[in-house]
Structures are given as C-alpha cells and as structure tokens.
Amino acid sequence: MTSYYWAMKRLLAKYGKYFWLVSLAITVSMWIDLIFGDGDLFLPIMFSLLTYYFFLKGTGRLPDDKDPFSG
Image (tube, rainbow, N blue to C red; front, side, top):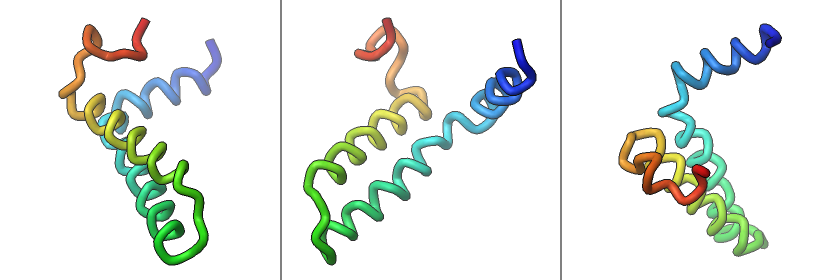
C-alpha cells in the first residue's frame, strides 16, 4: 500500500466523526443559493440527506448492521 492510503486512513480515523460538518457547510450554502438566488431544489435536499447520514454515522447513532449502504 502507498503512503497516501495510510495517511488517508489515519485522517479518517482521527477526524471522520466530524466529516458531517463539511457536508453541513455545503448544505447551508445550497439552501442560501436556493432562497436568495435561483438555485436548484434537488441539490439542497440531496445534501441535507447526506449531511444527516454523515451525522448519524459520525456520532455512532447508525450502527453498521442498520446501515442501508454497508454491504
């Protein structure tokens, strides 16, 4: 394995539970664009659902056995 792989693995292990905050920032900007600009409705809804999913996974409220995306 490359050093990039191990660096990403350490990064996700250390900061993975806070990843939903990145998604939240994008979600807020999409909703602002929709309300004050002429944004698309699909993107804010999609990013809102992704933010909620990442929040549940990051805080441990969605275990792997109930996760619809884990094989």
